[in-house]
Image (cartoon, rainbow, N blue to C red; front, side, top):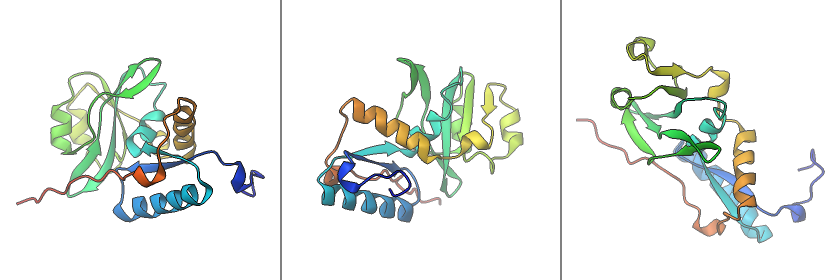
Length: 174
């Protein structure tokens, strides 16, 4: 806050990433955000990690499907389409294997996020798939802040005690 010359008393809300993401990372980030919100008596704004990845693709003219490595050869993902002047999530956040994600692509779609470890041979077979650049596939705090600001302006605030992380249920591979 010193860099921006902002005093804690000037804060009106705090935006935090709610996941999906690493268990420990989410717990630490949420705990820090909740502590500040509760101490300062201000609301919290929970922002999905997939929303942050999709936000970087606003200039895309096609559907967007962010991928976050969830381990065990699964990815956290959701589909985003252009609606109401921006990209909007049109389905649930899911944990899926790459093969299942690729089977579900029936329109031109931009994949972003954790795509560097994905076999390009799997992707080249489907002519509907586009791959975002590595730079635009990073989760950037600036996009989280931008989404948080828009939610703040719309009054979409939460009591910090009610904000919960998004975890993917772990399926046992047998």
